[in-house]
Image 1 (cartoon, rainbow, N blue to C red):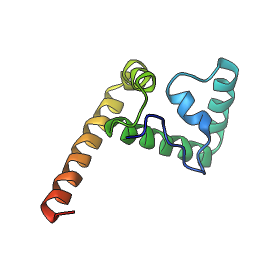
Image 2 (image 1 turned 120 degrees about the vertical axis):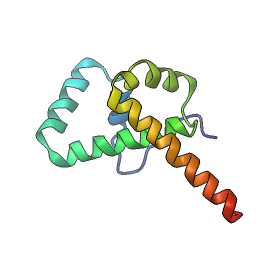
Image 3 (image 1 turned 180 degrees about the vertical axis):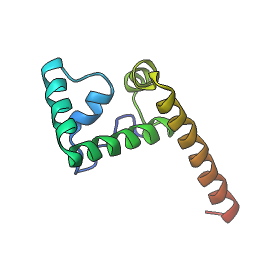
Amino acid sequence: MSQTMPHSAERDPRFIKYLLGELPEPERTKLEDEYLGDDETFKRLVAAEEELIYTYVRGGLSPTQRCSVDRLFLQTPERRSRVVFATAFIACLEATAELSGT
């Protein structure tokens, strides 16, 4: 399993750093201005959140990244709920794959 957060080509690596609390304050403020002022940037941030959640659930983060998710990202009930959903969804997919023999 990968030990680093994968970055899709269309993703801005700042999004993951932002979500993990690793982006320096000036860059953080700039990114916040960008996503608050541009729907497309906001959509890309939301997609990065989803990617982070599914990578977290599948165990694809480094120990440091996983700690950052636990400590910072999962502070809201909504985000914790999304992790619970992703965990159940992946478990369902894996069970379906086992039943189908793939």
